[in-house]
Amino acid sequence: MDYKKYIADKIKVEGVSSSDIEALIAIPPNTDMGDYALPCFRFAKALKKSPAVIAEELAKSISPDGVISEISSLNGYLNFRIDKSGLLRTTLAQIGEKGAAYGSSSLGNGKTICIDYSSVNIAKPFHIGHLSTTVIGGALYKIFSFLGYKVVGINHLGDYGTQFGKLISAYKRWGDREDVEKRGIFAVNELYVRFNNEATEEMEAEAREYFRLIENGDREANELFDWFKSLTLAYVDKIYDRLGVKFDSYNGERFYTDKMQPVIDELKEKGLLIESNGAQVVDLEPYGMPPCLILRSDGASLYATRDLAAAYYRKATYDFDKCLYVVAYQQNLHFKQLFKVLELLGKDWAKDMVHVAYGMVSLEDGAMSTRKGKVVWLEDVINKCVEKALKVIDEKNPDLENKRSVAEKVGVGAVIFGALYNNKIKDIVFSYDKVLSFEGETGVYCQYTCARANSVISKSEGMSRELPENLTCNAEEFELVKALASFPDAVKDAAEKYEPSIIARYAVDLSQKFNKFYFECKILTAEDGVRAQRLAMTDATLLTLKNALALLGIGVPDKM
Image 1: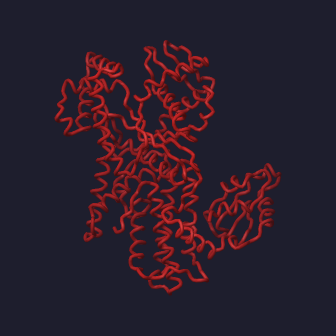
Image 2: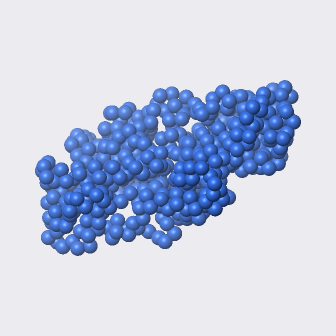
Image 3: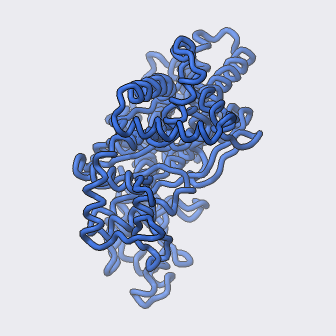
């Protein structure tokens, strides 16, 4: 049961919809007064009453029933207590009925959401800086799909620019085909770094000429470019597989080169394109922003030009309800400009474009530079986490079967969880020791909780889960069942706020409540009726926690 919705439907506030009331209902940090609470402060101005009076009047207008056992008001809050046995029975029934679909809904009802994420650069390293966009986008893809949306995952490849002329120049000067075929993207990256370290004016001019040849369809230049692209995708696809990330489109910047002109023409027709120091721009100063550059003085396009063409294409192709861009916060201005230009062009769907900004991620020893070759490859970070996980497993459980497979799930899960646990806008300093801790707010802790629950279930083979007629709930059981019941709300909240950390924090909270229940309540040795109830709660916890972690792209080993 969706308890927030159930409660909201009982509350009538003039001029306020049930959905708006539902959004305000929360679980109070101190549950002494109730299990759910509605703050009434936002209604005071419209109703011309104090929040305390509003809460008192609403409390008198609602009667307890089989779901709500008690209603009270205090200091402007309307408090509700849920019938414990009713909550336990309905929650366990829901989880048992829906199984791996528990927490899902038809909220999306077939609506389409485009998500632009990861967007790797061809022939450049897939480094630690790509981690956040990749796993945030991957989690949002899973969350929206879980809620019934049709999701289109887009990897907007960075496959356009003079750097590809530099690569061709470097390869023709120093490259060896056999070496590049053997070492792939690593060899290509070395050529790119060498070019930037040794570049002369003559070499830079040569690079620009090779890029011009690419644009003009030169066969040899394009064959080399396509080769570099295939090497890059072959490499990154292996990492995507490990992270559980998928895409439906790899249309990158180059794809839109022949789709920009109609947009430029429309900007001209609507009088939005003006000249500024030889460049063509859209004046955004009246809206508190610098001009949006569309064409450079030499006629070359820019990111904004290609992003406008991409927006047109995505709307025409997918007719999206929302188009999300999972891109670092350094690009805030770019997306504000992009969305404003679309609005000035009269596109009513400009309001459906969303920049999902995130902070930067780095290792404890500092930043990176692709040009100078000072990069930390994401694959190396994942491999190091897996190896460290294997070492910990060898220490804690040396006889564990399939240790390498378990270490892979633990190590990869640690990387993903470490990037998703905090609010996405925060900068992250990645710590191997922290993300691999079996204690605290980590993915490993959640996975270990699953293994603990699974161990109980394995030992309970043949034991009944049939609930007794009269259910009782002690404090630990009630806290656990409330957490289980709140999972559907957490999923919706994560989607509404484009914030996978809500799911990650939910997973930690559920793990903590289960572990307290595990240590405080006898399970396998309890009396028959109580044992059945607690085993059913253990089943439900394992299933729900697996569902939560799966939405983040994290697998769960049976044993650890």
